[in-house]
Image 1 (cartoon, helix red, strand yellow):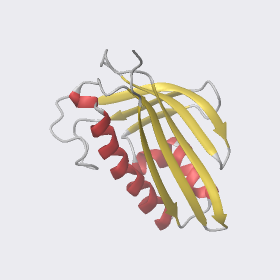
Image 2 (cartoon, rainbow, N blue to C red):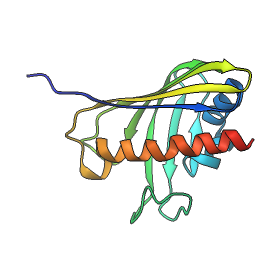
Image 3 (cartoon, rainbow, N blue to C red):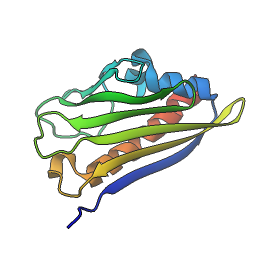
Image 4 (tube, helix red, strand yellow):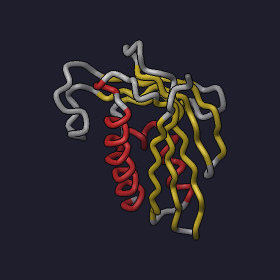
Length: 154
């Protein structure tokens, strides 16, 4: 019997260049302005990633009532400047969480407009509640909008 794999997909149009959006997705100093509190992202295929959301962060209500920091780690699978970023995503300290894949595809619509498609694949539907498909779906809805706001105010 094969497991059903669930996919999260978010598509937004950002009034900013693909270069601006890509930098917001790949530069640790910019990532911490809209996404996690602490970032490791080595900008090359095979590079390490680690995104940490601290328990006392006041940036988001997305991770309310946490008693500890939450981190996800992985490695970069695809890195095409201003076009695509993909990395594995595994919630640390959660043994039943599968290694999933987050992909950001950027399509330049004009000099100052970019369509961004986020895809997060590999969910089995059996993940623990604290890191469920539904929780990630809600989290990505929030953070994709944070990316839009961040890029459009630059």
